[in-house]
Image (cartoon, rainbow, N blue to C red):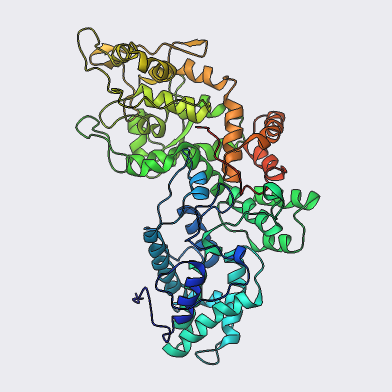
Length: 555
């Protein structure tokens, strides 16, 4: 791989790029000022942290997906991009509120050059991207034929001739100095990939109070990242350019997108964000206690849950409640051993139906939930209860008071099981309010250990899984899932979660009527996920700019 210097003298082939990065606020050591025609079109990294929803940064997954859309699946994307930091538990919100660090800028720069070098290496990718034969190393006409359509796709909007030529100048200057057209074009492509117009998703709307409505291109971008988790395709960009993203034309475009296979990629992105599944990549369990734990367990559990929702939401289009009551899931050999069922295939994942006699059901019975919301050496009814309260029911649980002892008592003759130890902990007045909300629910899952294996004993004593969910008693996990599937907060919470993900901002008072209408539409559809996506995409609230939205308190 070629080695690129971070800062280069202005008489080098990279000098125009250095000037461009000064404009964008991407590089230090700038020695000249370059005017920018449209400040809104190019927002630098040095700007204040953007307000929620107005300028979301591409997540790592969206960055990878965008590169695949632009250059094809054979181009490898470096893995050390700026980390995705959640806000209010959501990476989608974090992308709208967290600025890029100086180290992150360097990482994006390195990724841009690594990708550009692959793209311009002799082969199929370069052949598809370059439709012309350069007449000389500095052939500006051929470079323009490459840069103009690529820039349009990468920036997700129409581009001006001045913008195109500024990048062409980077490529031509580098080509002339290096003596090779394709080597120079690497610099032009890298410039595009380092531009804030690529790395940020502009959703600022017009200049009306409260942000106004999104522009056609901004709406196309929001639609594409919501439904597909990637950049708009040519058809969607053309519809935006021709003013066809309104009324009946918009409905047809949304229906086209919902029928596209990329909607599965978008669904997996939402479920990962909603349930925090990316944390499973680094799942750590004490192997001396959980002998079936391994580095592969977390990623396998994540894949099980994603395949489960893909089947539930998009293949069978089942109602929402079945995510808690379904006996269908997808396992590989490692997960089937934990579930104590035959492996459906010798290698990879396969669909299975859990036995009627097994109380394990739906999402709460999967390793992803049971292992993620537990400690490295034990279960945690508190963490599992918090997951149900906050993630599935949108109940705000206050943080423990400062300097309050949060550890639970060690086992003793008076407190032998975890249920008894937690009861002792709740006897402390400071602890009772929060733990009273969480522990009784989490204890309903105590028949599953810290990696999701079924068990009947805790510290050699029988496990008691009885409890009460907001006035509805249950005897075991099976009855808990039934009670949860009928909880009045389940459906409204889910609608709010999807709406929040779609807009990249926490909902506020302006959205209450829109969310109520979406909930009504969701019920009319039989609580079908695809119908909810369609209703949100067509909702006026989805088309509104969120630049001034504040992060309302919601777990």
